[in-house]
Length: 251
Ligand SMILES: CC(C)(COP(=O)(O)OP(=O)(O)OC[C@H]1O[C@@H](n2cnc3c(N)ncnc32)[C@H](O)[C@@H]1OP(=O)(O)O)[C@@H](O)C(=O)NCCC(=O)NCCS
Image (cartoon, rainbow, N blue to C red; front, top):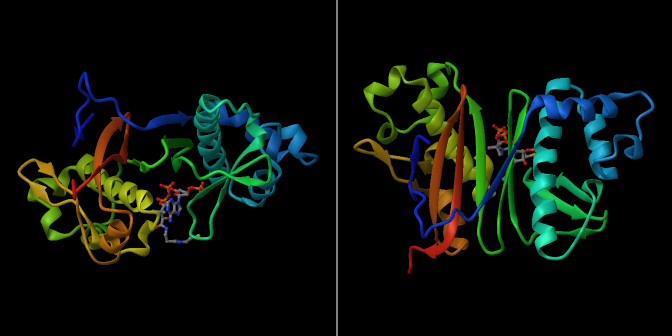
């Protein structure tokens, strides 16, 4: 782990669950989905809405990432539903999208399920998902550690978030981006808010979250929950998870 604003201790268990599905696991399902005579039944794990959406994705890489995130989410949701005494097959748990792009869970083709907070991300063939229990929120982002254009970095990062040492620190550049994306997903705004509206100013070697403008308004509408964040380096990728624990800044 690179940094956590809420380290794991004996009396603190992380409130979210996380799952990752890689390209190897996705491939057999992708092949079944791509078959000329594919049907929801032949693909088996996808519901009708997912089947339709999956078939419209033209780029194989995009289709596989989309699939990987769904397989990860189905596993988490299946587990959570079992805790509630509900036993469903993977194809009865569909992960579609709302108009704003955020994940929408549909059970048995007819029942919206928004009891848990679900967040998805994909990068280079891997799909990840995180869920948080009722009343809590989670946002996840996975990005490859790779050089990013100076023009992008200068627009993405606020001066308060940048130190000279970051000019050549691709991990930290990537981490900053994943933190912003994870929070924008937790808020369900995505980057309809400005990059600088979700800000992680440096305080010495650590960062603290500060929200501005539309991001702050959205946050206040949610009751100003304290947002924690964890970042991990996985091989050549950074994974960041933003989550709430039920505490609010108002005590
Ligand atoms: C949300 C956003 C930050 C995602 O980042 P990304 O680097 O493109 O992609 P990632 O792989 O990390 O994440 C994609 C996932 O974010 C989720 N997502 C999209 N919009 C979201 C939102 N408003 N809130 C929470 N999650 C969202 C989706 O589940 C998506 O996966 P899926 O399409 O397989 O369901 C980015 O797409 C964004 O800023 N969108 C808002 C602006 C926009 O383009 N809106 C169009 C709406 S269709």
